[in-house]
Length: 130
Image (cartoon, rainbow, N blue to C red):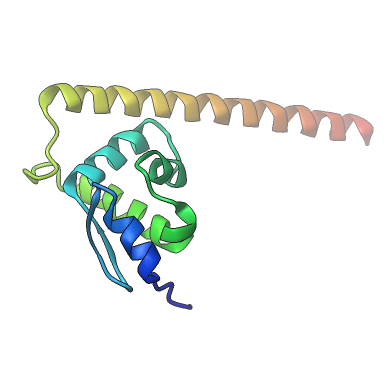
């Protein structure tokens, strides 16, 4: 896989973002605040690319591979380390987090129900056509 290196111009643009902890031609590191904000938006069902845009990053500069890796690492870290003080949510935020998760799961369940219903209708039409 080809490595996506940042140009000097891209590095300057990335450094100007308050959510950038550090950047080099090869790496981009994010602040804890970025990770927390990313996690909260992720729980609301926002796509990683849209989260990056909302937090001031150009997905074309960051790259799809980095966005996907960052999303994976942040969700893994937040899911596995709720006791990490740098990432810990307040009690109110934790309740909001759980409520968001419930809403997302409800949406997914409704989507699955619709998909099953449509599939059943399609199967009935195919069966009747025979």
